[in-house]
Image 1 (spheres, helix red, strand yellow):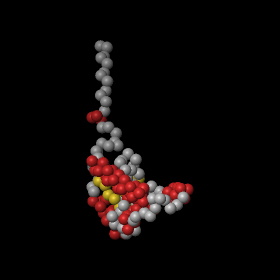
Image 2 (cartoon, rainbow, N blue to C red):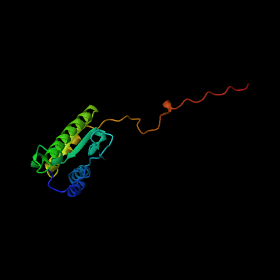
Image 3 (cartoon, rainbow, N blue to C red):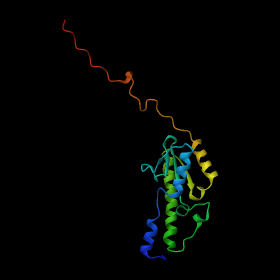
Image 4 (cartoon, helix red, strand yellow):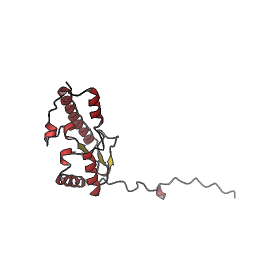
Length: 165
């Protein structure tokens, strides 16, 4: 049984963000200041990763400890006090969905990293994250990408008309 009114629960839940959260913004600021460039919330990839490093085929998820069941801190292991059947099942579904999305990304050839909200305040964890990202080499792109076609690939010229001699 929920201990707050439905209207109050709605207010509480409306204030919870799924993207651009404080931990996510802190990670983005740190990695950008470290010289790493990325895209955010790619909707084409399973699980809509928080940060995508396309040139390295790397996805980074910034997980909230409570919502995704962090194994490192007490928020991840915290038992809710109201509506326990719903919240326990919800967190289990989130963990299962996370694992499924990570598997799908791996099958598609993507590397996947996760940083937890409790780790974001630790400078050593952020430094390790940046080092881990840099350890994955960029994918080499085709040398003709973005360039005009060379003369050898150009369309053939039409045959010359015979001269009226």
